[in-house]
Image (cartoon, rainbow, N blue to C red; front, side):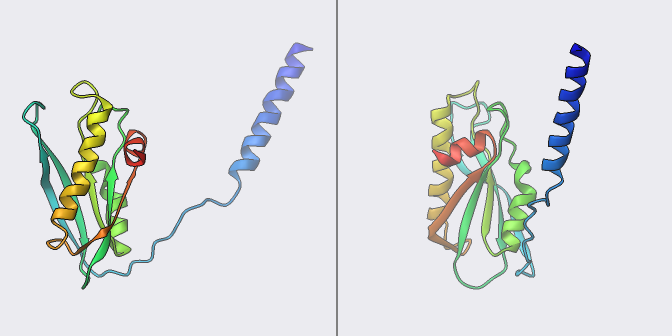
Length: 157
């Protein structure tokens, strides 16, 4: 009797999962409105003499458009242990195709600093982009921050 209840529960769970997964996926198609994307790699936006690597860098993806455009800063996830800016290549490229300047940043991680200082790293990236807005055709009043996992937490802070 116990095996029968277990078997029925497993079948019900499989049916539930398959019915919820059968729904149409929520993939968003971004229409490319930009012919060319420029990429500036390893741009230093902050330097700390107490951190082992001493400087933080970002990769900036810039659409070839005239006039000022909004910017988006991407903070990657990494369980607070790593912050590889290369994790943002695809999302930043797609944002640049949609007409945004996009920057994938690195930040200091747990083990070298606490999370409050990591929040300061994201703020430093925002300040750096505002200070260099003219160089990259950024509307300095329209800068957003997004992220995944630990980077999402930092973006919300």
